[in-house]
Length: 232
Image 1 (cartoon, rainbow, N blue to C red):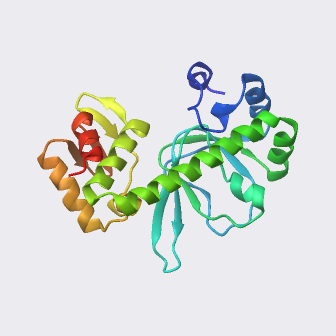
Image 2 (image 1 turned 120 degrees about the horizontal axis):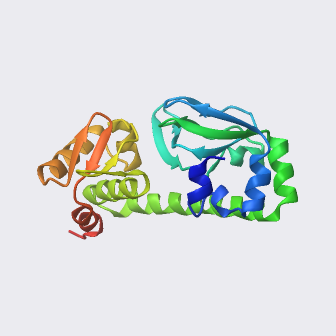
Image 3 (image 1 turned 90 degrees about the vertical axis):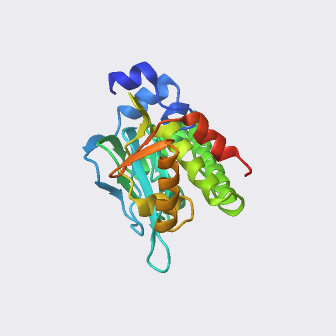
């Protein structure tokens, strides 16, 4: 386990973040640690494997193809997440693909090994349940945003969330360097790439954000949050 995690721990709500130190140590002593470069695929939609990735650090995107062949971005996996646990639990094919967005360290456990750990550590099962429920709540919230918010509300909300969860401070503000394409960002808010481009241009003109290739910097979180919560 890295010194960063020993000192700071994983975010609340993630699987690893919900374990006691003793349970984390027991779990991290199992499996195989493996590093992935940015852009490497951890899991493929439709695959029938049952192993689980514990994301020790880094960020991954979760994507899926719709019946008409359109790829959409569903959510992000944060450090501390148990990636692939759903298929391990219900024995169904992978419902989505998972790809790293930056260099990432993982712990890989076979399905039977992870199941055995859950059976012997009730707190781990509770932590996994909390993480799964959290994903369901986030999914419900996203669907509500798509059905009720205006386009600019949806755009500013997702930018505020990404800046809060994945932004790192720079001299110009919070930089979201997740290497997302405009198509992926548009899919998060149920918009076309053209609409997204217009919305980003409007925010740039107001000096709320600046953009570079697959990179967004938020200059004014106060204004961004105001726009996200505005009824105008």
